[in-house]
Length: 392
Ligand code: NDP
Image (tube, rainbow, N blue to C red; front, side, top):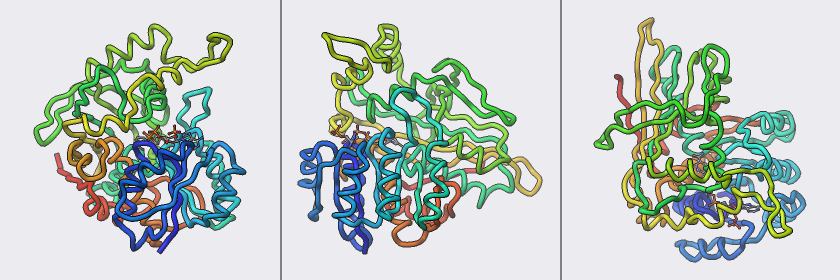
């Protein structure tokens, strides 16, 4: 029986609340708070059980502290934007509340994707006897757990890791992103970076590509090398990894639109002056693009996200693939969201459930691969993200 505060009423926040409501024996009291109260109320109206809602500006630590002191949650699930990670962690420390998020902190003026800002909270969380779980979405999140599971059950040593994220869905829109457009475009247009022989190797965004044959009829797709934050924590916590890369599929249509938007300066995060007002082109673009949560009823097809792992078992080389396939239309039927929000929201709920039931506990700041993968892998099968694996 626990009280949980969920911050962020976007596509992911909506899934987290729906999934928490499916486990009332753990999440006995839920509050959904966000910048726009009406969005929280609209989500609350879809739920089978009553929850509380509130307005909060999560950039303001004092507002968060007042809300937490009033509601007294055990755990705060942060599914607002990466910009709010540090202010929410500060408020959790002040109020004695455990913390969970799905994306690492980013400063607004630089798309950096580094953990050092949040890892710097290690001692403070430890001293307070609180747990902060970082990156409990799908990627990061389940991909970290898949890698930890492979190390626990299939390998003596992991040498190479390729995380491969495919969205084979179609929303029928000329151009839209499946999660927050500002965060998505910052991520996709950043230079690619992968780990090789003890150092980071940088290459231009979306330049390195290859074909990958996805399972269960999804078939051959072009995958593009990118940087993704779990590469940093996984290579730190599993130091035998010599090479780690992250790949994502993009449709030709998405890339064509992105190229034009980049060429005309619409993806820039440098402020410009417009009619006497300072605006950031990417933030303006976000406002005119479709809201990702509106894509739910439109999206058909499946996602397939997994890890291709090479390493050693009993002195012999072994190749292993582990993945989840998720159907956009089934997600919509269950919780009114498309699969990208679903595959992020379900692991956030599972991470919270394991923390609240004590299956995952500790004081300090943790990435997912530092915890025992077994209970998380069991819960994935129960709560809507079943996984499959095979030795290649
Ligand atoms: P949305 O933009 O749909 O939702 C974000 C929500 O946060 C909105 O409701 C927004 O309010 C709210 N918010 C923004 N700023 C503040 C603030 N200052 N105070 C309070 N609330 C605020 O994003 P998504 O739901 O698509 O994504 C949520 C998070 O999930 C992001 O951090 C994203 O990076 C992460 N993510 C992680 C993935 C993973 O696999 N690990 C995959 C996909 C996403 P308003 O409605 O008023 O704008």
